[in-house]
Image 1 (cartoon, rainbow, N blue to C red):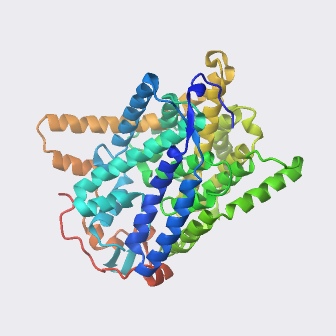
Image 2: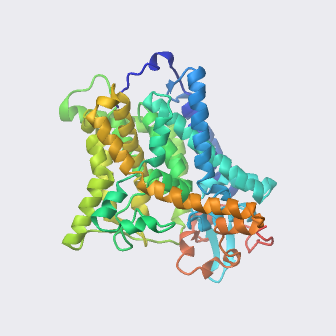
Length: 526
């Protein structure tokens, strides 16, 4: 890591509370899942193990840089807070603003969690099916919705989203050792050079298509990563916990809690956890350790030290829960996909892939500080981003776009460390080049911001003109037909990715006996 030498560093201190808050944020959904799904005797064992493991995490939470509060930091906190609230409000979460088409499925899952008894097992033409999806992020808000009604549940989900953004922003500033607005702004618009790639392949017209996913070159060439701003408006349920997990990894100074953190996050974002594991190994191996030899022997010694550290009490206890409970839960899914290679089939495909590698992440990786380019973290980030586009799981490249999120966070932090270390940015060619690349990489987010903003403005104008808010809200929330709950299998080709086999090991052995049947009796549009 490139340490920055700022004027505010001397006025700062170190505290474990940002890390502890993030630990609690990752742990609460796991606790709600265990309470809501497990049979009582397994629940007692799981909560005991999780309780001991979490207590060890809490006691051994590393101290990170935090600012001392004064007039300047209060102003920065207020500005960042407003920025984060706007981000949460305009993400589409909770239906407060226009939603991407993927929200139809997100909303449906959330409403199922609120209305149906847990574990969610329903009847259909295909027989009994169990809701088996990475819905962990929704569980705290869904619990509120069960207690106080669906409308309050949507508010709770929006608040939970905002809290996740705030937790991540605090961790980022601690890692950068700088309390400022610019890292949050950089993160919000951080992305690959989609505009350049579109220009090379004469596809700039895609930018004028409303609500399109412009990270895809076309439906046949799935080399694509999703910008952070786009992740917030489409896959927030996986992205936010993945961001927090990755930032927590960088807060660690050894490997004692890495397995525990990945296991906790796995109920919310199993695909990003795969990428986080690689990033974590690279980060832990790169930590300075005393008494080790040099060269290859030193690397091997660091690897052995990290492996020994990983066998800690908290990682063993929480790791068993992650593997036995969360792992078996996802293993019951009916969405049986085959991991396949997505190799170029022609010279044109090779050219597309190379252009993607260069302009999606290659230029930015090449511009980070030279000291970072000699670290295991840099090489791990490069390897993940090179390899994942060559894989395919299912109809699209969800594995690549989700498992790459921790590597994207790592690249973002390396860029910020580089910028923070520049003493005179206005005289630095490196800082100027990074600023140009960052500006060019904002195209995907700005595209969404423009079209979503137009849609939100249209709603405001319609309400101001006297139209009823309720039907406008229902359109903006992208609701699936109510009949989807009564017979999920009617959505041919889609439903298997959300449901699992109630006769699987998890549901047969670990889970409580469900209250089976279609339980939707109220009008969800109300």
